[in-house]
Image (cartoon, rainbow, N blue to C red; front, side, top):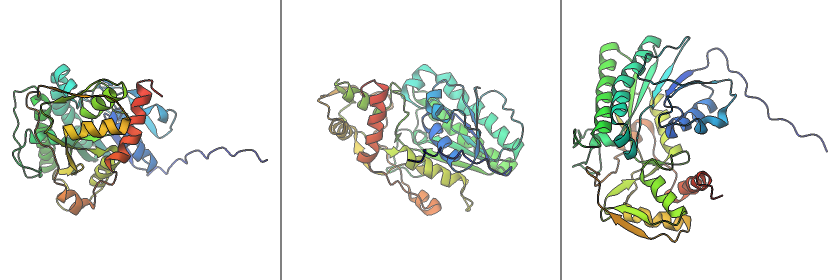
Length: 332
């Protein structure tokens, strides 16, 4: 029997291979973007201070000659030698737990961090993408949420540090676009789930899945009638990449990326119980301050501009997500 062939090493690309900088590249979504960029032949530089990210998310890439990791706070001056073609600004705490524990850091990364990342893009002549959020719509009075809606945000509430940091970041990006003619992109991310989410980050998917796997009561806030729409990570990252590489007119304007399939929190809790085979019961707790009653993206613009819409059904996306949490919780 002939010996097994070793897999061929990745061929080093030509000197003209694209170079991408990903702030927050060790985070949940940033690490999935890094995977995609490396697969497409980019050289990637991750800048992350690991305040909410983890090297576990990029451990599978150790030794990759096209990847460089820099542990640094993005609010500090960013110096990189050589060419940079794309700057993907993913850095930011992004969960309710983070808002309460890291409000000043959240505001700084959205303001100072965005300023430093834009400065890097300006200095290198690179294209820039900001990951904004559906939270800029606040507790929306328009449903579903369209990009032209200006939002209903409590600037001094507990979620204000995140909402306002992203609203300021969007304004700063557009100022750089108009003043310095930098090619910029803004994506407004709606609820996303998948492997590499933090178990205790306070968002609904990790909370429900970890509670169900442990057989604990699943905590639904309020009566559970508030709605969310869940997009699988691979769908979201694919849409974001399309936006960055899009050259159509008006591509500098914000684009919603998310799954328009809307469901109540009570219905989602029941779905998690079914998907995990758990015997957990549902318990209700008081609704947190400023918790949005409805979240559903209007993705008309994404369809028209990018030819994008989500493909992964919830049941299909929950399989690897639940498997990941089983591993993180030591339940394999």
